[in-house]
Image 1 (tube, one colour):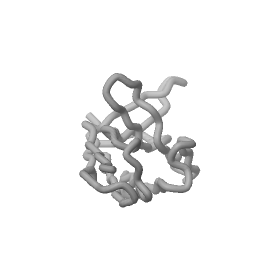
Image 2: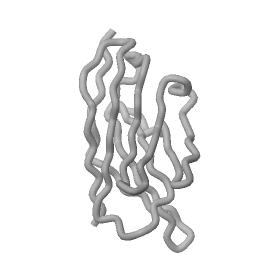
Image 3: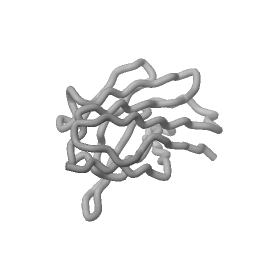
Image 4: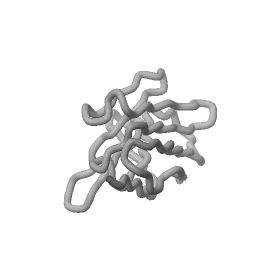
Length: 119
């Protein structure tokens, strides 16, 4: 069973920075994408950023230019550097690992880490 362990969330003032980390263990398959999603109460979980094994990143428009995703394939670890944080970035952030199996995408999720940005 894949385990995703997240760290780095917390409380920060607007304009500040945080760095999230997520380490995947018990991985016995080829990971296609690692990424971060976020969710606030009453809203759907949304993509923040994701990165393929080849290093191609994809960002939500709302975080472009402020957040940077990176990945250490050897350690099955993904990072999210969040700069110039805004109160609207407040959410629970979830780590995601995606694989392909039988021509379908299979997703694995972390337990979530709270990010709170005060104004």
